[in-house]
Length: 98
Length: 534
Image (cartoon, rainbow over all chains, first blue to last red; front, side, top):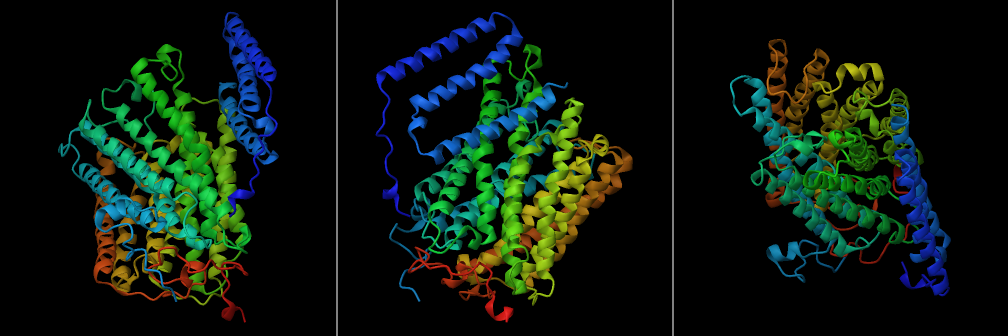
C-alpha cells in the first residue's frame, strides 16, 4: 500500500569507464556479426542466436541498470527470458525437424 | 450504512455523457465496456445470422462470394477481438476485482480509462477498414500469410486496429496484476482471495506476456505489405508457417484469456447458490495458473496439417492432452460443490450449469482434435467451427450471461424478472445446441468451413442449424430485453439478494463511489457460509 517504502537503489552508478568498456564490447559483437554474415547463412543465424542476446544482456545489465536493481527485478527479467527460451525451443521442435 | 452516493448518482465529475467518458471509476469503466461490447456482440450475431441465411439458400446469391468472405472475417474479428477476449475481464474484472479484494479502485484508474479508449480506437479502425482502401478484409480473423500479404482488401488497417486493441488488453492486464499485488485489503492473503480474482490474475499474466507477440506479428504483416520485407512471404525466402506460429503463440493463450475469467465467475456463482464453500479451492486456484502456463505451450495444435514437422506434431499433441487436466479439475470441483449443497435454483445457477454442460462438450471435442489422426480428418471443417463455438459461446458467452445475471442487482441496484430470464433460457439452450451440434455433425460428414456453397447431402443439416440460429437469436433478444427493461423499470434490488458471502455482497446495491466506507479486514476465506457449516 505504501509506495514510500520502496527505497531507491541507484546509489552505485557505474563510471564512464564501465560504459565505454561495454560500448566497445557491443561494437566487437556487432563486427563479429557482420563478419559471420559473410561466412554464409548458417554461421550468420547461429551468430544472431548467440551474440544478439549477449548484446541485449549487456544493455540490460549496464545501460539499463539491471545490475544495480534488487534481486526481485532480476528474477522477473529472468522469468521473462525463460519464457522466451521455452517458446524458442518449441519453435525449433518444428523448424529443426522439418 | 454508508454516506457516500452510489457510483451511478455521483455528480462530482459532471453529468451526462461527459461524466461517463471522463470517469476513472472502475465501475463506470466496467459499464462502458459492457455497453460497447454488447453492442459489438449483437452486430456480430447479426452477421452470423446472415451467414446462416446464405447457407439456407445456397446458389441463390443472397450475398456475393467475396462479401461472404468479408462476413465471416468480420464476424470473427468482432467476436474475438471486441467481445470474447476483453469480455469478462474488462466488464466484471473492472467492476468487481477491486470490490472482491477490498480495494477502492484499481491501481491505475487513468490507465484503466485509457484502456477503454484504446479499445474503442481499435474498434473504430477495424470498422473503418470495411469502407476504405480495397474494401472489407477477406482473410478470416486469423489473417494467415501469405494470403493476407497478397490480398487487395484493406488488411493493413484492420490489422492495425487489432494491434491497438492489443494495447487495451495489455493495459488491463498490468492494471489487474498490480491491483492484486498491491491493493488487497488487510488480511486478504492470496488464498483468501475469491476465485474470480485468481482467474483474473492468471488471465492478466497471459494478457501481459502473450499480447505483445501478436502485436509485433501484426506489425510484421503491415511491414510486409508496405515494404515487402519477406519474413513471411515464401517467394522471398520467408516462412508462412512462422506467421502461423507467431499468431497462435498469442491466439491460443487468448482462448484461455477468454475462458479463465468465465471459469472464475462460475466459481463465484456455485458456492452462493449451493450455500457451501467451493470444493477444492486451492485446486481450482492452481488449475487457473496451470491452465495459463500449459495453455501457453500448446499453440501449434492449430497447425497439425500445415506441414509442420512430425516431431513438433507429437510434442504439441502431448501438451494439448495435458492442458485438459487442469480444465477437468475445475469441472470435477464444480460438480462436487453441488453435491450435498443447499441448492437454490436461481437464474444465475441455471446459466452456470448450462456453462458446465456446454463447456464439457466444447472441451471434449477439443481433446478429440488434439489426437493427430482425428485432426487430419476434421481440420478446417465445420467440426472446428462447432467446437470453438461450444467453448467460446457455450463457455465464455454463457459464463458472461451467468455472471451478468449474478451481479446485475449489484451493478445496477435493480432486479430483473426471473420468469422472463427462465423463459429466455429455453430458446437459447435449444437453439444453441441445434446450431452448433449441427455444425459438429456437418464437420464429421466432411463439410469444409468458410465455403460459400455446399453439396446437396449437407443441406438438411444446414437447414436444421439455421433454424437453431433463429431460436438462439430469439433467446438473446429475450435475455437482453429483460435486462434492459430491468435497468429502467426493474424493482429495487437488496444489497444481498442471493445470500452471497464475498465482499461485494457486504456493500449497498449499487455500490458507493469508493466501494467501502472503511476498508474491511479479512479474517476468513471467501466462501465462509458459517451457518450452513454448523
